[in-house]
Image (cartoon, rainbow, N blue to C red; front, side, top):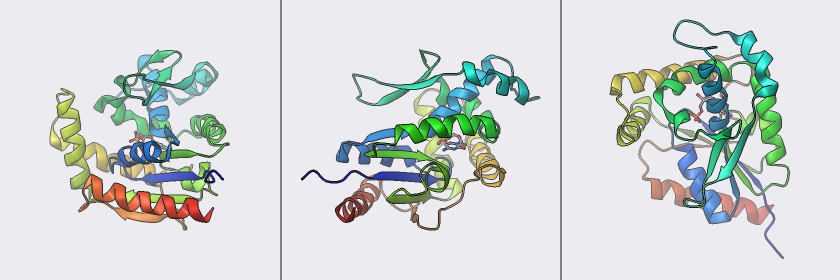
Amino acid sequence: MDAKKIVIAIDGHSSTGKSTVAKQLAKALQYIYVDTGAMYRAVTLYAMRKGYIDELQFQQEALELDLSKINIKFEINDETGLAEVLLNGENVENEIRTLSVSKHVSKIAAVSNVRKKLVEQQHQMGIDKGIVMDGRDIGTVVFPKAELKLFMTATAKDRAERRYMELKEKGEDVTYEDVLKNVVDRDHIDSTRKDSPLRQAGDAIKIDNSNLTLQEQFEQILLLAKATIARA
Ligand code: DC
């Protein structure tokens, strides 16, 4: 008999490597991977392009009125085998990863109507299970009954260093101080917002990866996933 499929929810602070381990797990288990942060980032990019948000202002109502016009989808890149995000049919995978999108995304993600729209879509994607989903509220709101919930964390300094290296490698002109500030600011907004704040679900397993290599972390989590699938 085929192994039963489960839902794996991975939440945690910004830049804790949630998506790295989620991708590794999805590949090893032949599950679907969904990066929910990419969905909030795509809505943010839409708002930035429309001029609804910048350093000085945020026209929340204008964005809310446009929500029915915003279509977010994923498509598989045949070369990498990984899902990339489409905003109204346009592949925006690279653009959503810039520091300028990171600077605005937490404000957009605090809007209840934005969350409602995206959470409904996320829920549909996981209805047949066999999914690894990462974000901030997956184990608490999107799939409160997920069979395996992980909560990832690491020191802000470790996280900022990793994110800084990633952005530099992509050729972005950023300073370490700016990246650290963004990590700390986002933690604050994501954890203190009214709707679905970032918090560890009571039944989530905490993984502090400050002192773990990617391989060690993956091995630990794969064992947990296999044990959970065996019990399901
Ligand atoms: O995972 P990420 O850094 O790409 O997410 C970008 C932002 O989106 C993050 O700062 C908070 C928000 N987010 C959220 O509120 N809920 C989710 N499920 C995923 C992301």
